[in-house]
Amino acid sequence: MTRKIAILGSTGSIGIQALEVCAHIGIEVVSLAAGSNIGLLEEQIRRYKPKFAAVADEALARLLAVAVADTDTRVAGGAATLLEAVTLPEIDMVLVSVVGSAGLAPTMAALQAGKRIALANKETLVAAGSLIMPLARERHLEILPVDSEHSALFQALAGNRAQDVEKLLLTASGGPFRGFTADALERVTREQALKHPNWSMGSKITVDSASMMNKGLEVIEAHWLFDVPVDDIEVLVHPQSIIHSLVSYRDGSTMAQLGAPDMRIPIQLAMTWPERHANPFRRFSLTEVGNLTFEQPDTTVFRCLPLAYAAIRCGGTMPAVMNAANEAAVEAFLGNRLPFARIPDVVRQVMESHVPDMRPTLESIADADREGRTLANEAFRHLKKE
Picture: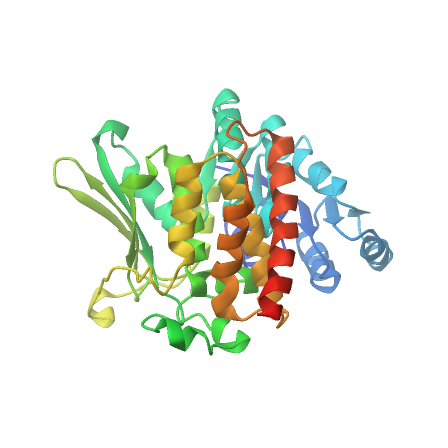
């Protein structure tokens, strides 16, 4: 079991819940990293007493250093400090829960330093799965999924042979706009998009869930994590969020993992695997839930999902540029600069403009990420003129 951990994104939804898990099962927090919420990070430093804390913004890091000068925690600022936070020698595991492509460099650094990874940042594998997974295999290191869907697949695959897998079935709640028509999506607001029916998550992932891009990113992540062809990965809408995903085998058996929609459960499993520890987290009752229902996703309305499939089928740097365009589009939507229904239009335009590098390197992936954001900003301007 993991005993000493670094948490990247400690002030986000996953990071906060991960710290609850650490307190409950006695995992020592060695380092924390956050973006700009230094008020909450100060509280975490005082409670969990990490050796080191990293802040992306150097000016904010200086303010935090003054605020916690009475503690034993060393504070540093700047992008490079994330790499220090994940490579301290005493760390057993790194939980990567920063948002977006910012997770790529620290994940690579942690693997190169011989650390196990608990991965809550799907964009890392979306953009660079062809680099991350071979590195993990080369170093004989585990990448343990934190997303509830991938945790479910991980558990349903355990003890079975890879050659017996017929299909992976990723479940999706359908988000707040399940059942909407394309016309109805034209009128949705930021506030509506941020009201997920089942899960409490950060704003970016909540918007991705509403557009179903999150499920597309999860398809790509599952492809890399479990080495399953993308055409053998399906999405199934399951509004109750009780069955977190399923694996179908060639003998006709299907294995499913069920649980309450509480992210602390898969977070804890990633930290303690192969052990399972008792906890006070919420349970569910099948009799109280009553019906479990399923339906096919409407890909004519939720157009981000087929775009993600198209990106991974193309391969190379196409998933990286798609992911960057989506990040930029979601940021614009959250800033009230882009209508929700135009997010897939921006992503599609960027993908159509990109010529992928079919043998990507870390440098070409970084270039694709920058290109995706630049092209997305050009697409915003074009859409405003229409």
